[in-house]
Length: 112
Length: 114
Image (cartoon, rainbow over the protein chains, first blue to last red):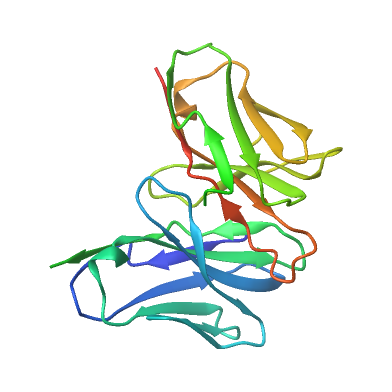
């Protein structure tokens, strides 16, 4: 069964600190991997997308990495801000189609 | 994303009632999707439509039906609501012509079935 597992489930950090969120997947055949940010009460918004041949992608203070051999991805957030408080969801696309497999998300809380 | 709107945003209903959730988009995308999100779980695909005449079941279609009234509108119906359909429902759209085929999500509808 295609699965996407994320860790930790939740995380609390102080404002200004860095953090790294993890994603492991067993989805096959792999097309691309995305990280979405979901603010409370809102729909998910795409942060980064990486294909099989890309191993890192940045979007401002967010940097995603991908190791297609070990089927692992991480999302690193630098110099966290209060507005980073949200759920971060790892999403893997199967083959060349448009079907997505979602991880359960990591709920991040940034405290002042 | 303001380009994808969902109505209602919140709804409370009783077991056995029929309910319709509506989704509209102004992005001009051909593909539309309905997902449900339960606490701690990933979004699960209910139904998807790649164009007006195309409707496909997702992972968890039982108890749900959909209608693609136009390219811009995709509605989800619960024919006879049950408590375990209490969840957050999201509509999403994507453009089949786009290289990245990113899905853009609406703000969600929070449904409570009593």
